[in-house]
Amino acid sequence: DTSPKAISICKARFEKDLNKQFILFTGKKGFCKKKGLSATVTLSLDVIYHLIEDKTFKNYMNELFFASEKYVIIYSSDRVDIQEAPHVKHRKFTEYVRKNFTQFELIKHITNEFSPDKKLEDQSFADFYIYEKWK
Image (tube, rainbow, N blue to C red; front, side, top):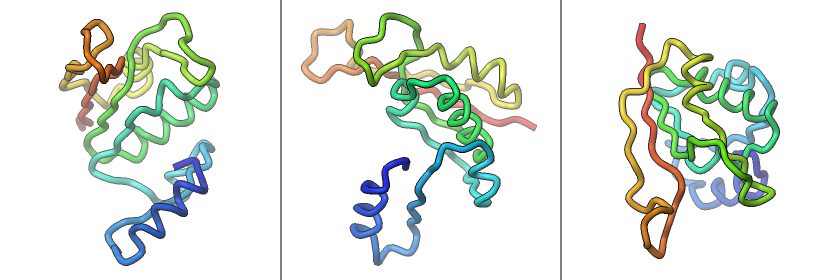
């Protein structure tokens, strides 16, 4: 996480669980490689559309895909339109992935049942996108 407070809360909550590790993410290029971080699956949940600066977005995507050994699961919007709030910037991230991470293939797109076009109380403009790394 990028929040020292969130890291502190999680460390306190799971202090006896040795299977969990919480690390402050700096957002700097090469972070995962330098820390030796990788996993079979990397997840990005409600993050991408909160990355307002292009450099931050690119660094984040590089780290997300670099750290993945097999799968990347993303929950985000995938559109370009008017900015809804100062902390939201929608991007067509699937195009960015297709152009920059050619070793990954989008294997599944799961449409959110709570999409904004439906009249539901709990709406979300994000969907799930599952990528698989092929060799």
